[in-house]
Length: 151
Image 1 (tube, rainbow, N blue to C red):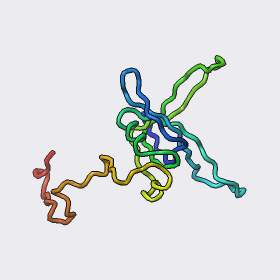
Image 2 (tube, one colour):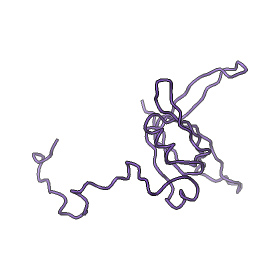
Image 3 (cartoon, rainbow, N blue to C red):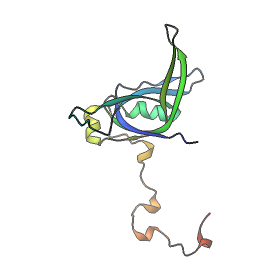
Image 4 (cartoon, rainbow, N blue to C red):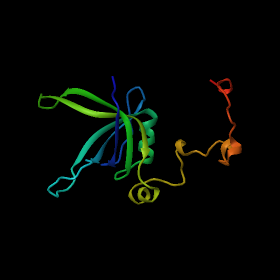
């Protein structure tokens, strides 16, 4: 079985961090995702509004670094759930459970449209290890045969 979803869009409203009764961080947010085609009649592109759920550290990251209007790339899986609405009708909801999120706009675009603070770096943007900081060929060792592999 395969259940993989990758979408990129703009956040419709500021995400809010909540906690379950057990203290697990969770947030839900909606992405406005443009469809990849333009209608032949010259009309405007259509936009889908897709609900996303993020848990634990991913939820905290989203709430700290993303706000309304920011472009975000989400990798996760599609989940469905059934519920009964206030009128007693059975409903089915589809949402993406985010396993990984990434910035998808430039720092300049983000600074104008949100509360992103360029002085704070998320863990994903940490500096490279000192052993590989120069990027030159001297930082690497040639492996001649399978016996030299560490695994």
